[in-house]
Image (cartoon, rainbow, N blue to C red; front, side, top):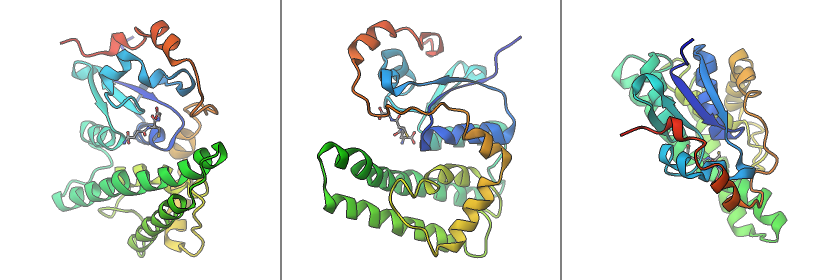
Length: 239
Ligand SMILES: N[C@@H](CCC(=O)N[C@@H](CS)C(=O)NCC(=O)O)C(=O)O
C-alpha cells in the first residue's frame, strides 16, 4: 500500500495543532511523527534540513519530491492550495484569509507566546519581570479584542466561511488562560471559540499529538543528536 502524500512532524502545542486541524477537517490521510522536545528532536541535524528554524510543525509532501514546508501558516496555505479547501475562491476573500493568517502569525502567536513564557517559564525559574509580563499580557488582550471586534456579526474571520485563518487562530485564542488574559465580556470571540470547539474534527485533532510535560526540559541534547542523527534522513529532499 502506498504511503500518504503528507508526512507531518508535530507536537501538542498551539502551532503544532494547526496542520492536524486542517488534515482532520479535510479528512486527508497523513503520517505523523511526534517530535519529542525533551529529547531535542527538533534540533536534530536531519530535521533541520526540513525545518531550518528547528521548531515544529513541518510537513513533507511525498507526491512533490518530498518537498518540505515549515512555518505553520505556510503549511496551512500549502495544504489549502494543494487540496483546494478552506481557502475562498475569490481573490479578495483569499486576501482577507491571508491578512488574518498573518495577523495570527505575527501578532497573536508571538505576543501570547511571550505572555506565557514570562509567566509560566521565566517567573517560576527566578526571572520575574513584571514590566515584560504587563507588556505582553496587555498586547495579547488588545489583539484578542481586535478579533472580538472582527467577529461582531460574522461567524468566521475571513471571507464569510471557515478558513485556515480560523484554524491558525483557534489554538492560540483558546489558550488565553495560559497567557493569564481574561476574555470575559468578549462575547463575539467567546461565541467563535464555542463554534470551533464544537467541531468534531477539532476535538479529535486536539487529542492527536501527545502532550509533552518537559517542554523546556534540560536534557543532554548532544547525546541525543548523535544517536538520532539519521532519524529524519529518509524524508530529506534528495538533491
Ligand atoms: N513561527 C513558527 C513557530 C514555531 C514554534 O515556535 N514552535 C514551537 C512550538 S509552538 C517549538 O517548536 N518549540 C520548540 C523549541 O523552541 O525548540 C511556526 O508558526 O511554525
